[in-house]
Length: 150
Figure 1 (tube, one colour):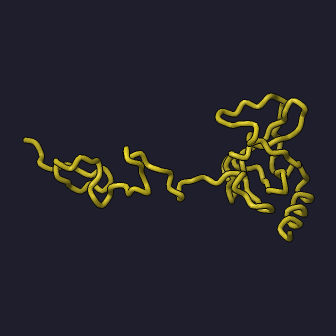
Figure 2 (cartoon, rainbow, N blue to C red):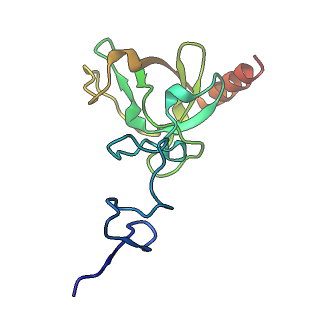
Figure 3 (cartoon, helix red, strand yellow):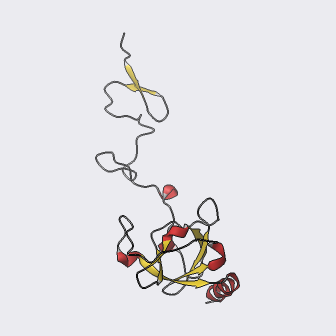
């Protein structure tokens, strides 16, 4: 025997068969959350902060492979990589935004090694590469302190 009601995918509540939706009226995404085809937009609570979002003087942690050495052995960083408030897992490299470059705490990258290369990050264009200033931990801390007073 067929059921005369369908179940909402979100809350599990019943809804009439004639409702042509996966969700009940209470759970249906609003116009601000989805387009006319029902494709959801990224909620701000799920948006990951990136290096480009940092304010000058702000300290964050990112992945060591966000940094690379170009063919001229200049250190660069990809600004579309995540910037976390706390160190954790592989987000171990401590960075701070400066005026026109990114400061990197040399002590936070431990024994990472870099080979000069032509970068090949998927979906990343060269305008997202930012020069790096690699500093010993004490110099990094002093630079951040100086930037925060500007």
